[in-house]
Image (cartoon, rainbow, N blue to C red; front, side, top):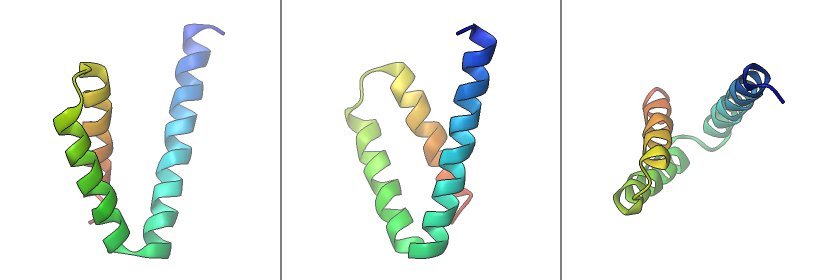
Length: 67
């Protein structure tokens, strides 16, 4: 798979995840989102891999838009 195709697939999967997150928020409300947010924050404190840390922080930024 070429790099461009791979990038497109990754972006498509991110959009699916975002849509799932929106549906989760609508179904379960803010309490579950807060639980996920707390978990991700705690995970940031234990992660040493810089790439993973950047991705988790991106996910946290997304969660902030749902508060």
